[in-house]
Length: 619
Image (cartoon, rainbow, N blue to C red; front, side):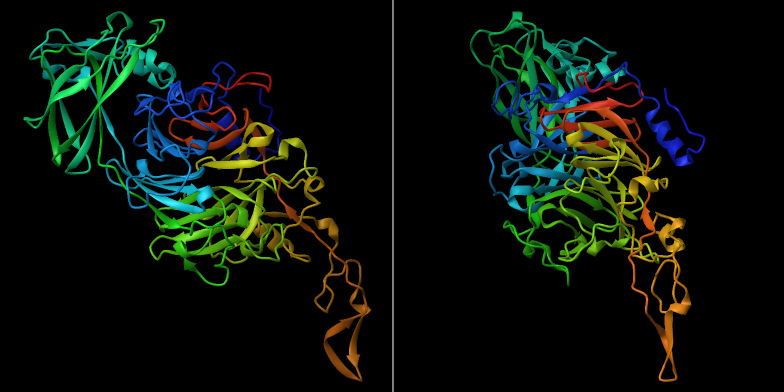
């Protein structure tokens, strides 16, 4: 039950509305990872394509959601790879990285390039069709890299029932996709009796049986990768001998011997075992016809064709590959000639073509202008800096910024500082007083604030602009938290040990910064312009040798007076979860995706259907 104080603000009510639908009946569900570290399926070996819930991950980090195409991208940090999950079929694809740490591959296909502990991710989703661009913090290579991405498309075999000859379409679970909590995303290879869609195609006869797919060359002419997914039930596994089928592309034979070797493995027969037959097919722009025909060796049961466009290249956009200090405080530098030191979180201003980089071990946030290729520091980095609020962002102290989030209006950049245990906000506008300043919106450090307002190792951020809710992965507290960034309250007993802006700031200026002014300071402004509480203008010398002195000389020893303090924003616990790391928010479906580094998995929470309750419950 949620209790509201009579003084609750409208913004507080909005935040409560976001969280009020959460009940204990539906816990987190795993959508990727087995809970054990590794790279491939249920073994440590690499696989071409498999179900995400049956694929091992190793300390997954940042997440990026492509809601329009139904994909979730993740930085599989200790596997040194970037993976993509098709949220409709539950299949996982390796997008970049070989699984081995190192650096190479710039200018070549991303899937064959080496990365070294990628942690941060952000995507430019403005491309047409399936074209996307991913930016990756290649942390131990001290670079930020760009990956051109063209997503594959699934063609379900049973949906092409009108293009069958001899083969027979079988529909096994036509209603499976109606309930997302029981669909392919969570079931793995048990889904639909071995199908990623609503069924499969069975080759009833032998010679001459065929199935045709009408395939769209989504990014134009080129060589596409055609992957046929097939399976045999345990009772129908062929003991030996390869099955070869003829493959046609637009009426021309591509190969007479595309092999579909038996998939049987020693097992209990409770799970389907899958294989992939892969061919590289030249396609023309527009629709193409791909036919698979039995040549006399028998045919497998096929449930999908997965078509991958030509592989896109990877390249470096910032960093030299060697760690070094930020050298752009005085003037912008060419990004590929300016050193980074363990870059982490990323945020992207698509309209302005600006990429924000959390340069973690340099204690600053950098901004890359992708049109000019120049990089500059926008927050932190100065040798003499202050951790108090209301300061110029360049002079604001950042100890280790790791997570970034930009609001949709591109006015505020939120920064998770994992050492300061705070979430800071940089005002990116040019507004008087507040433009270019940095303030705290969540977390006030160990020993300063009560637990409900305390963060320990915040890692990543996701923002729901509509409600003003900022989701934070509070890693060392094993919690996912929600902060109301639209409003706050002035609990001076909590924040008096922290400063906002400079001493002697006026009430109006303090409030413009979003901070709280303590009227009990009784600050009096002396004629000499200094702030000294409790003293009157008589304590000054107004004439020297008979001549008026302006400003007067004060004989009163100045005292440090701080009357402006950070505002306390409401922070709630959304979920108790071991070592939450990356986070992504789907505002349309009201879904949170969270990676768990120590559990080597990615989980999903439907806010309207439930959550785990309490630290003792397994999540």
